[in-house]
Length: 541
Image (tube, rainbow, N blue to C red; front, top):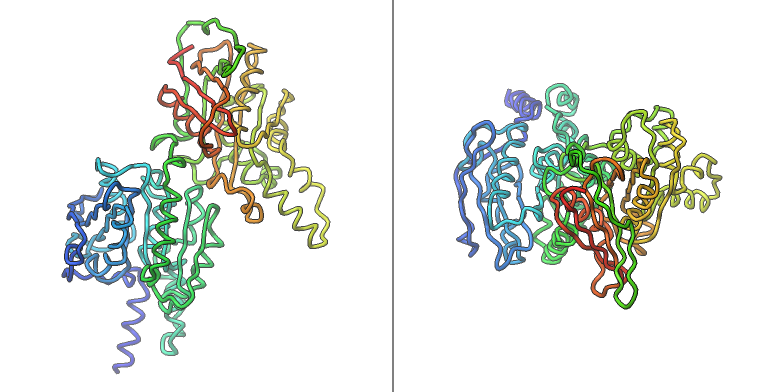
């Protein structure tokens, strides 16, 4: 009879999502007992549930802030030591207790926990001692699964700089079925989770939408709770930029016990949150908030499009007549670029680079409108080219279609074909300065023919693995389109360039600094290869 009761109890526990939650109300320790300063915060989720979280400030000036999500059992008092070392490394840490755990009210649930994470992130964004540009989401076990889903679907996901998941399982139903299959007693019932476990928050199903945020997966090869193959399943489903660290000999959520791993993890957080990468548009700046500036009836101000003073330190400048702009790669933009205006037969041949480029370009073009397109990319179809070379190395013959789509101007050609527009198209690839030089090309076309509409579409993505020893930028896929019109209402941007000394900036900074100038009406600079670029976005032409 006891065996039958145990069987039924196991089926009930594993046959519903609540089996994943094992909260404990009593607190067994606090950070101050470990010599770590902390502040207990009272938070309120969007549905009114009161929550508790512990904020551990960085020692000295904060380098970044980590929002920590613990595993499925007990509460933050038994998990905080996994991140208590981070303040000494210069990181703020906010450790959250989900609803029903520790001092937090309510009952645990997957949708409720997503609201809890959102409340914690909102609290961090409101703090003056937290740099909103440098927040990383770090979860372990169940917390890793929750972090993956929030990084892909969360309301404030655009405020994150990276998602880190340690010992996460790939799927709620899969892990429940595996646990049932592990025992001869419950083996016949491994089908039950497919009927009773809520899989709407499956990490494997959502992880692809984390891109273009950096993603790090950590898993111990000796993990007996969540088998290591779950990490591989997640990694295969994720999109770049992504990293997988498999740790020999490490068990479940034991990675941070290793001092060497702690140092490696600290270096990763500093790398993905360093200031240069984060000089990007503010939260909420995205494809749905395309910039469009109207000047009323005033004509563009009279000035020479290009000026070239003579002598040492000469500065060249020109007018960039912007009437609209759009970006892809920040908070609020669609998880997948929208290219429904391309017919299905052609759409399936588009690379990811094509998709983000056409996504932003089409946002700046009216249906049926004729435009001159300037397509620009530092690397272009490098992923296609790498695959072609790999096929040749394997002795395979690449298809003519694959070869034709590997050239830089493929996206521009496909866009013209899709829109039946025979207007001129230009392709630009000029190394690290591709974006500002493409601005010069597009602006020159618009100023030369004031009746024309010119759209610059810039797109780039991380290079394939085989090329990364040679080039490691960009780290995330991104795209920007700028519509230029010389005669119509516009925001006038003065673009100038000159020889200049100093450290080189990351190539993608040119895109995001220019975008910020359009959003805020401010000035910006970018330097590379001994050349300094400056722009000033005047309120109106």
